[in-house]
Length: 235
Length: 64
Image 1 (cartoon, one colour):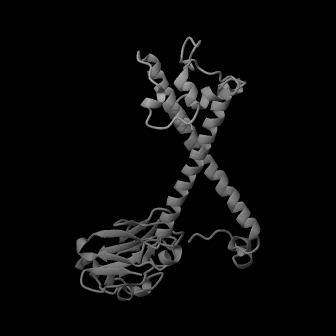
Image 2: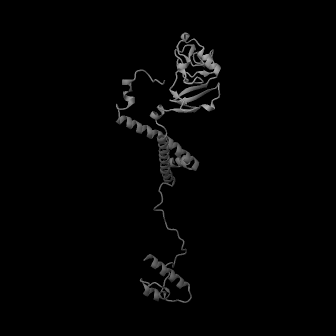
Image 3: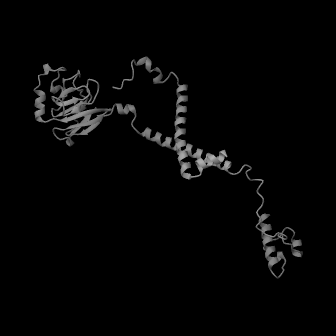
């Protein structure tokens, strides 16, 4: 009924302002269901006696009793809490996806590392990381190979000939962990032209054999192979 | 008065509110993860490696 009465009221208002007083029914396309008899006979404005039509109703019944700030704080607190929980959840979701995609510990424990040997010039050391440990790769010169072979094996603390320690004489591959207490030796240093452990002064020769200092064993040789020319796979 | 103080401290500037929200998210995540891990460990007490490690591994943490 509301739209209908609105229309009839608007019509009634325009009729009231018009100089020619016509029956409302005559102008309305919709039939006036309610009090058409009264409208057709006499008309009285519903705003009669009101000084203004823009009078604001009294909302005091609905207003906060204790001022607005407590309600504002509550609203903002709820918004902020929801935001914080959402942010934590979003971060956790993304993080779990990324963790899920990264390699697991058992995969990493069996990891192999492929090295391009063409990038290593003769007489240079390269250190790569393999299963969390450094691996030394040295492209030895012919003079260094001869020097490694010229050592009297019987005089060594951990007797090993150079052939036992390398698969190809020009490529020396070994774990860069000092056999004494696990420091990482420094390349191209020490009294024997090989590696020198700065922690307690162990000297290794150009084949990674212990020659002087407290270390009991030669530097360890990992499993490795040359699947093709210029490629080394450690592991 | 408490409400006014809180409002002025946290919500008057949007940047401050955003900062508080992210700091709160960080703290919430820490606390929530801790609590959930504690509940998990409590339910699975005696069944996890860290509970039975001492039966199989002597000595301290062997890193090498």
